[in-house]
Image (spheres, helix red, strand yellow):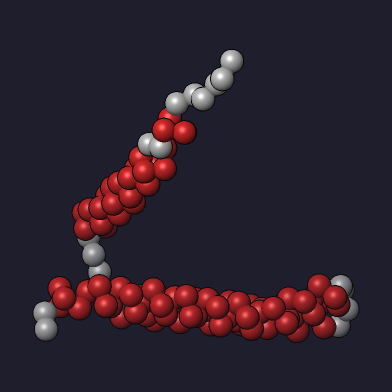
Length: 113
């Protein structure tokens, strides 16, 4: 298979990994954050700070690893992709608006004075 065919699959996989990494690390951060909130300035606060910092560093390290494994793209390719997405989504919103607001009840005033 060519790399061009695998590109969408690679993109979907990297997006999935970003989401999975974020959900897992966020879930692990809830307990130390709540302990930090409840502990105030007590003896648990420094431990909570270290745990939260370690989890944040782990999140960044995992994201850096999968981003480094991907291929680099030029600013031109990024701009083209952004433009295509904006035009596609803009077109879809325009079509949805035309369908929703093209109904006679919404398009004309129905006053009975």
